[in-house]
Length: 202
Image 1 (cartoon, helix red, strand yellow):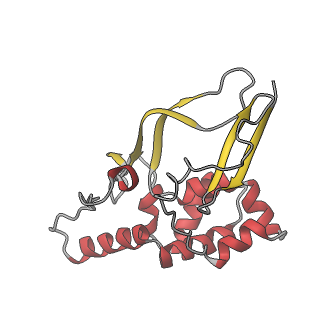
Image 2 (spheres, one colour):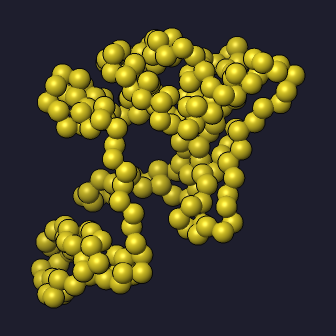
């Protein structure tokens, strides 16, 4: 049985991607409208990636090669939460795809680590950048220190979660008796199929 991937542009400029199984393509007119509900769904263009990420993802430099080879380690070390899900492994000769079953959970840890656990995830953003990099490198020795430092700086400059962690830390330092929390709010006027907040477990 033949398997092929179809990647074409529909009339409304949405990209149609499908897995075609069989010997004949039934859609000989090459007209695809289900991908964007015949133009009713308008996809916004992605904002430009920061220059650092563009360079690491495209350049043939030692830093770029290391980043691409170790991209999962970098992503995990710089993440704000750990993700949990029941993963389904493809059966037989199916092509690999990451597929989860049921609810996907994001574990968010307190602002400060306990005595039993090392600092990780969002907790690292309250430290000085060089100290946070050292802690990340202790678990990711194949990654490059200066790349971690550049990525950490980029996130602190651009990511609202990194700024929120640091702001919470400063509030606690200035007002030790104040209870400080980060809350994810849902706007009920938005389409929940598109804007639903992640499920959290602490």
